[in-house]
Image (cartoon, rainbow, N blue to C red; front, side, top):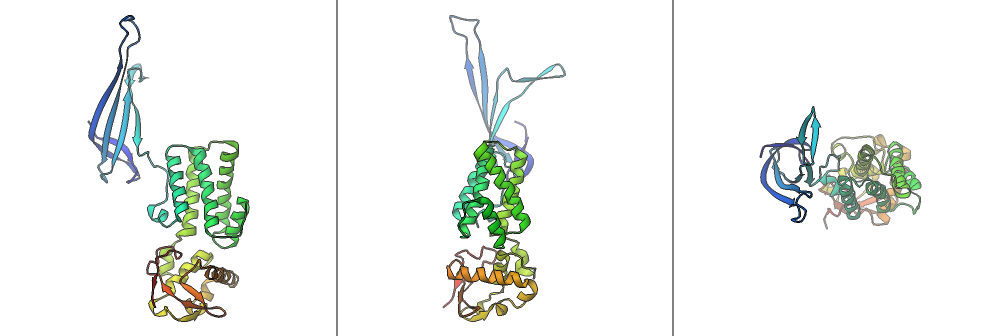
Length: 311
């Protein structure tokens, strides 16, 4: 068999694939002896394993053909086959495994189910799942109890977990999910692709912001998540076991964070420490904090259990 040009999920583009296994199974229905002129049917299913010549990944192809499967082109009959590939082509821009691994288990599992729905073009289920991801992140962040998703999105913005522009984009996911759930409207593939991009950006903002910049450069802190990551960046081994003010922990805090934002972020920080949600600091008097752990894994979510503790 000749080399085939097929989309590769790992390479994220069409690449040359070499067939490494092929087996044809013939399905034939002969005329009945009592009716020799009756319909004679036959078809062939070919099972093929294809290996990408770029990354060596292997995919399965099921190819079916029968004599009726022809296209007439310029008065010539051209046979064709119906081909099904597994795993399905992931031409959508799904989140990286490094991001998915940082998500809470329930949200990561939900994302994987949404991925399966999209790959199989179950777009109504995918729309409902994308909407549910937003609901799940709200629950995970333990914000005030709300039943209405519209208000939940507003609260996420008010708490500094995402910008107002990002909040506006999330409302489009809310509308898409509502139409799928209540009206059974099936979205177009392009709509799902855009919605998936919005959710990916949202999840990265919530759980995996631009920490490469945060670890190496001073930036304007405008979300609580960035505030916490900058805080973890400034904690060193020598600080563990000692007490500091916020200004001592982040010397340039008044330059890189607006006063109103700093007041709001400090209030959230105190609440999360009190609720034992954030575990590498302890409150020690008014606006003073004892460092109890240093996180060597600064590329990870600071809420992880990946802390190194010192006595």
